[in-house]
Image 1 (cartoon, rainbow, N blue to C red):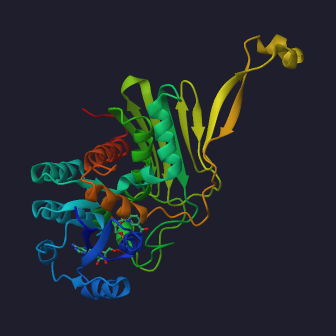
Image 2 (cartoon, rainbow, N blue to C red):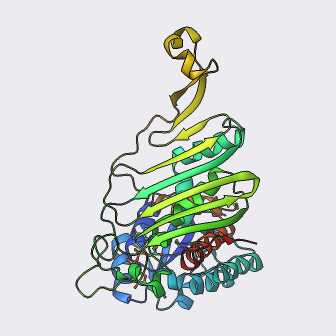
Image 3 (tube, protein in one colour):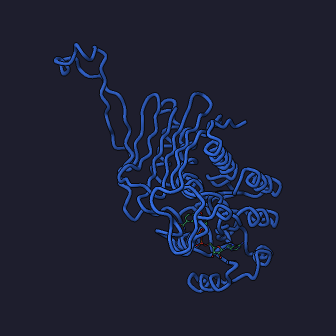
Length: 364
Ligand SMILES: NC(=O)c1ccc[n+]([C@@H]2O[C@H](COP(=O)([O-])OP(=O)(O)OC[C@H]3O[C@@H](n4cnc5c(N)ncnc54)[C@H](O)[C@@H]3O)[C@@H](O)[C@H]2O)c1
């Protein structure tokens, strides 16, 4: 493709601003048109980011020949329709997370991309672009970690309920009809993608989950919430592989967040990325404890793999727009394909069923 990829943005709220900041410094993509059902928001965004065209409808935006690709940045209830229309109009699509409200909708989106022969990507995979996760994935692929058989992720906000403690104008996050769910649709959606990707995307056999709505008081000021604040999800995968994902918008806890990769040769901890390997202990060192410990004794050796700590201002939100544009320009499937987002959607759907029916849910 000659010149930067022309990108249309559908939905110009909080996350669209991050995408536009990412595109502002991109050589691969350029925002050429925006649309929002709240037209004043679209106009304001266009003024701020110097975008030449404000569309009067999705169809108006999709009819433009300078729009090669679209970023769908609406709340979740509107992802499916906008994505399918854009693909049918011959545009490549980056859809915000959560990909879809349910697996049927996700499947229709993936099929629409296949029928159109266009690339479909989803922002639920945006953590794949962070340097430590890229490095960890390469270490898994090269065999350096042995067989990666378990990944565990914990992400517990203290007070981070959107529509209440943060992003107060986006109360849709708390409404199941518009958001599809709570912390799972908002947060676990990323870490489910990460734990599967870091194991090489094994087939998920079953899901067991537990969730809870309120950990502290419900939101005040007329805002209603019917979605979960806290969730624990366990995945059973082919080949004896497993994953645990713990997430919360609200918890009375600090400093428990992390991502742990367990391989048969080595393990990984993140932030900063460290590789943990066993080292045989010289029996002379262990003289006093030999009777208790036996003679085949190992200790963990921790080696720093990735030199940087995650800065406090870490915000990988906008980077995915530039990466998406680069892939489209190069004629390649972006690294965060819709098909993987469909799998994450199936896991999430099974997690809700598991919690509701209090049983392990098998995935065909
Ligand atoms: N806010 C964040 O930090 C964040 C981070 C990552 C991903 N996301 C995801 O991005 C998406 C948008 O979130 P947000 O925080 O920007 O929401 P937001 O409420 O700030 O903005 C959403 C915008 O979409 C518009 N909109 C609604 N329906 C539309 C439709 N049918 N067509 C066109 N525009 C429509 C709204 O008017 C609004 O301006 C969500 O899926 C969310 O999960 C948000």
